[in-house]
Length: 336
Length: 206
Image (cartoon, rainbow over all chains, first blue to last red; front, top):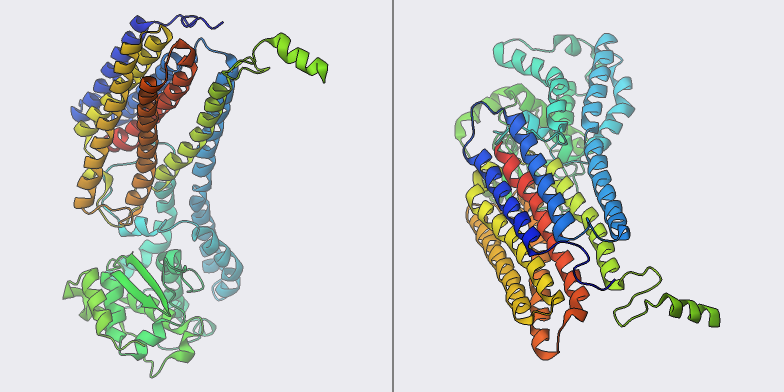
């Protein structure tokens, strides 16, 4: 029982395994470093995963002696592996929910359009629900809208959410964007504006503002504009202070160019990054700012509020500022 | 009471090395259970990395900073340290103490080289603007590889302690089970790196 060599593996076996492990590692290196035209990237991906599973098994079976050792050890280790893979799969499924969310959003939108005028009733609860599901993950949709230069396509099957989310999202966001850039003279969403009950605050397109906010802002700042403590600053109670301190143009700049660095909001300090949203149309930037300035009791705090116009946004498009410049502009404001 | 004692005795596996009714050395069984739990730990860290993959708003992005040639060399070093580890265990089992010391030192040395590569990699990333709070890639990358690096560090210290002890206390094949336990840990750290090397580094460039 205590005999050292009862496993049957000696230095010769170990050397053979070591050579195989080394060779496989350099094959993997070669596959990446010298890509072959006749090998599709899917084939390379599958090969790489197979090779690494092979290496894994060789080390466990021979170096860790599981092949010839007591089954109890294999049993315990297998339980761990099953749990690990289970965690993996469950995480992947959980984060596929956004595609479900987007499908739901699409059907709500369809219903709203079908029964024009009753939109607000339909929006109420489901919107809230969707927002709460979405807020579980940071920048899930923003990465889609921003059209970030992705280093590579996702080939690992476990990471489909961003790709899944885009078609549904495009259906919601793209048409207005095209309409407003293509024909800036006419209002793109006329049929909504024609409904008298939908316009609570005159002077700007409140519904469009809420729509852009739901798609682009609520992921971080949350549906109720409260942000997330220490991570994303609140807009509720905060934006009026900025506006009243002469921050009208600062708010537009922050929307277009983003903001980076340490700031203090309502007594809490934040050190993060907000991306710029220059890909939104002038109308959308104005609409979402007006929406934010007049929502969550913000309107009561405002002094001398005149809705922001799309033309004001257009005037600041060519400033070419950086998120750090915006931090400087913020410092120049007379904030309490 | 007495029958219990008798059973233990008749099993004949209650030795200084801790044999019990499982007829398995406690230390070794304990290590396998620990490794099973560590599997789940790394499983969730790798899962988190994959979920946040391609979700960073700002650069640097993985393809900007990851260096395949350098990481291939460090992966190779870690694999070969595993080879030295089984040689060390084999030498101790056959009471070849000088060889056992040589190979054990080799494992710790190769492990240190791997850590050196990681220090180099981390500082290069930071100089290119990738810190743990820069973006989601930075956060998940440093958390995962940093946790792995800590595991390697613990392994190196463990093996060095084993090596130093062999000069202070007489060490023989009777102690092999303890070196085997340290070896299991070491090989586990190695297989985790096999997964990380493929999933984080290679797949990025497919």
